[in-house]
Amino acid sequence: MGNEGTIATRRSREPIVLKPVPRSPWITLHRYLGLVAIPLLLLAAVTGCVLSFMRPIDAWINADLFAQPLAAVAAGKPAPDVAPLVDRFAARHPEWVVRGFPLAVAETRRIVVDVDRAAGLSGPPVDQVFLDRFSAEPAGARFSKAAWNRRGAMEQVLELHAHLMAGTWGRWIMGTVAVLWLIGHGIGFYLTFPLKRPFWKGWKRSWKVSFRSMFAKFMLDWHKASALWLFVPLTALALTSVALNFFDEAYAPMIEAAFGDDEHVAPAGEPKNAPLDFAGAVATARAHAVREGIDWQPASVLANPEEGTIGVTMTDDGTVNYHRLGPIYYYFDRASHAVVETYDPYHGNRSLAGYRLLYPLHSGRVGGNVTILLIFLSGLATAGLCVTGVYVWWKKRKSRVAARRAAALRRG
Image (tube, rainbow, N blue to C red):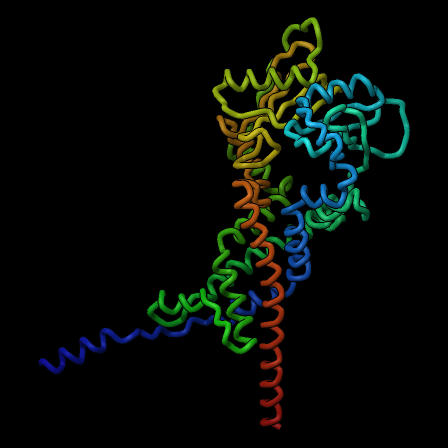
């Protein structure tokens, strides 16, 4: 009896070998989903990495427009508030209709003002004017729309990333690639599970990369480990890619069905003696936020002369950013100075919160520089997964072809 008990105890401690689960269909599906998606997925990954730093790259390659001359900065005068400067520009240059501008502009930068030409005027295409940070005089202009030149280069990269510069069809194609990526990503995660127990000990190997392995083994290990370590951000990228590319067709109707339309439009009120200017709109927005108990600062101004409104965006630090769910928008009637529209995803507007969730997550701006860096690394990892995936497929294909030829020779 004693010996039998000892034998039973020893056997119970031995690893249990599970019957192999038939994985070949999943491996085949993972392989071919990846091969179909890889060309455009690699393009999206590389352009996405570039877009992580879209603003600084744009300012760098167009430094002649963005950078304030050092002589003006060295004069030692404090830079005036931006909104009164743009009011001055608008009064002096009626040939331009101001559409928007940021409020936090460093002394070493010019003020970027989005503009249209006034009705009836013609000239070269221009949609941005760059104002001297101290005098508000125009110092440069450009047409920022997508183009293969340095003025529109970053917008061109954005168009390529979003829809291949092919409009709706391009967006649908990229959305389909995102769906294939999401499915293949999930299957790949499942394929990292060990067939034998103990589970955690076996799965632990999938998270490791041995730099002493043969190159083929190293590439396979890298393919698995990078996908596992970045599984959460890669899944978020894939999900938000699907939602953004099929926003009108699927995501927006789903959000509207779930939460309804919470948009609130208030009456304009009685006209004041003087129409609201940009500086007045900023002050009004700051006071309105205090009344609402919101400790945020004005970040940018948006003008819509056709509707007679001025919008002010409010952010947590007074800079144009998409932290969390992005800015709060207050729109004021220019005649009455009253708040006529509010877009606030943080205080009851659930549908707006649902819409706003996508871009901050997809771009990494949801948590500032840390999450931007995480998304950048995820883009690099996605590009790496494309390269290692093709390599692993190619090496295994060579083995499969050689095995088939050997079998054919034996039969012959």
